[in-house]
Image 1: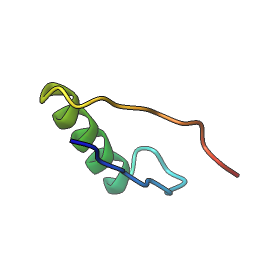
Image 2: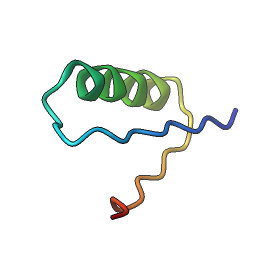
Image 3: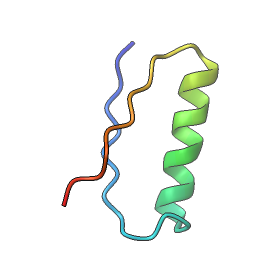
Length: 41
């Protein structure tokens, strides 16, 4: 399964950041490959 998570929030400790971290950890636990590109400016 391929999943694209687009995270574009300036504060990593925000609710959005927490939801992104939860999604990534859940996908990794399920065996989905993850790629973490650098932040674009």
